[in-house]
Each structure stands twice: as structure tokens, then as C-alpha cells.
Length: 89
Image (cartoon, rainbow, N blue to C red; front, top):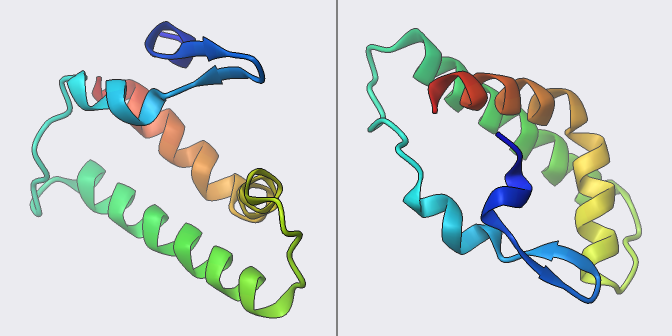
């Protein structure tokens, strides 16, 4: 299922997924679930990469550009998270 199904279209492309994604049937976090634990681990790794990058780099003033640069730093983890979440929903 494409994310665009859940997004409105603005002048700069798709947007507003942060509101609609809450309507998806995500299972409640279960500390005993290996899949949920893997997601938590990947989220922590992505966060650590982002924090390290932000501390070391001079970031542009543009918030969208900052987000794009941080996504590049956490690309591996974010891709793995996407794959796992696709299987969950």
C-alpha cells in the first residue's frame, strides 16, 4: 500500500501523513514480540545516527532540507523499519 493513499496533495507534493497514519491498524507494542523489539532497536539506531549527524554537521536553515539530510544518514534503519511495518499492517 502506497503512503500516498493517506496523504493530501499540496503545492510541493504529498503532505499531512502525520495525521492520517494514526488511523492505520497498528498492533499495540508487545515487549515479548521479536518484531516489535527489532523496530525499537532500529528506531534507537536511527535516532543515534541523527543525533551524531546533527552534532557534527552544520545544518542548513531550511527545516525540510535538514530533515532530508537526516533521513539520508538513517537510510538503512529507515528502510528496514519500512519493510517491517509493511508486514505489520
